[in-house]
Length: 345
Ligand code: AHM
Ligand code: MG
Image 1 (tube, rainbow, N blue to C red):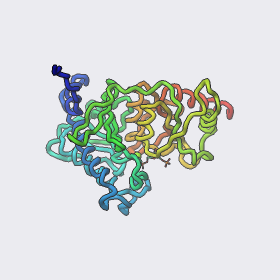
Image 2 (image 1 turned 120 degrees about the horizontal axis):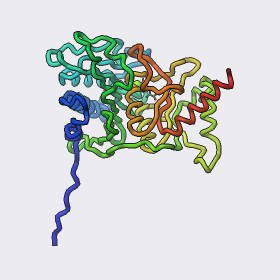
Image 3 (image 1 turned 60 degrees about the vertical axis):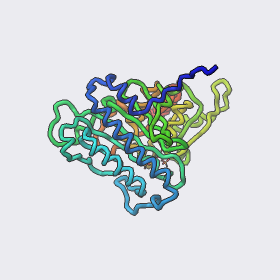
Image 4 (image 1 turned 90 degrees about the vertical axis):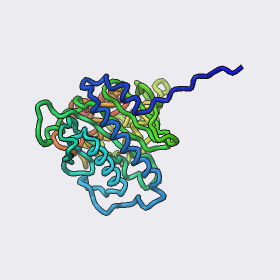
């Protein structure tokens, strides 16, 4: 006898965003449309990332971005896609992008009444583009500051991470995923290439409280502060009871390292170094969005002393050290940093 098996219901990103719209206090659909626009642009970027080895789209573009790094063609392409999507969507007033020194003002008729600004790293992990290793997109969304009218100003972007209304990342990997939060937990969507839709695959993501993976570029060891060196030694000690030595995993793409640690438990560190006292990573479009996601998933993000989300931004491309991931691991790193400072005093 034939018994009807109910088919498992697929929830697409678009459906999910609409279902959850009322979670958000300004539930007018504007934020939903912004997230949808970012989702669409990321599918276009994904298509190009996937054929990066086939067409002449990889390789240096021949210009240097404001961070002094070589810009790859794909970075430029991704930047344009996200800006275009946000421009035509009508909900975004201005964008702060890793690829643009100044704010990108969206001067379009459709967006003149928009209420949101977006910070974005369109293609993070750029050194991995030409070697077929995971790269990602990171984004953060803020509502314009209360009472601000007229053209966008820098102040619209100088808001603490605690003010983010949404943040997320896209990982272009063995499969492509979008993970985001609007402050009510974290959900992950995997792109089903057969239907061209992101489908809910990782509902209510949680970072394990503890882990046994540490991710840091140990090549810079000699330049690390004492406390970071102490933490690395702690990770390497043989101690069965605490699962040590931990494993080291470092892809060199923040999104990929963070995503793995989200799922398996772990810590990602980019500390200050002798050469770069504020580390390498940017507060607005790398650290704040991932810190929001980490906290929403039960993890922690700090600059070693203070919660990332409470840092007051002072410049668009400001950098900060980052310690992010499983609660217990970040707490231990902070403890050793404190101890090292006390020893010196
Ligand atoms: P990018 O935005 O220019 O790609 O730089 C950020 C990347 C992160 O994805 C990654 O974690 C880090 O830089 C790697 O830096 P390093 O090569 O110094 O370890
Ligand atoms: Mg980056």
